[in-house]
Image 1 (cartoon, rainbow, N blue to C red):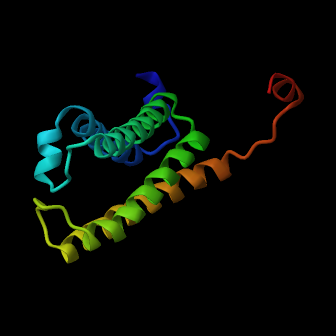
Image 2: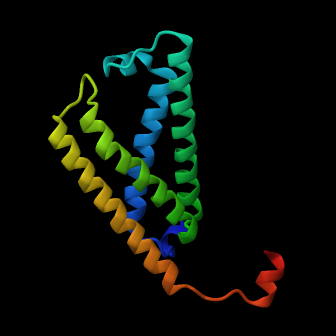
Length: 150
């Protein structure tokens, strides 16, 4: 727990990353184990080609979730930047894709979905900037002993 109390990552950024990771883990569960829920969204789950795509999405989302968990544990700001950039690109793509191709049981209309995604992306960009400032403030050059170990 000491790692988190002394972390240079702001608490709100960690909380944001925890929420995003939980969402990704929920998606991973759906892709691998809850095909009825996936079918309810309008995605066909019959046939080898569709299952191939579904399991690939599950694998890719699981990889992002694992990277997110890793940075939550390490609290390394430079690694955090990579995960935040992945989140921004993923959510940025969803900002355009979700309203254009809404799922069957979408809880909101396309414009509301677009607006919510814009807010999420804006928060993720603010988190990226906050961590970026931390990295820039701690831009200490490597000393000779660190260079030898790198």
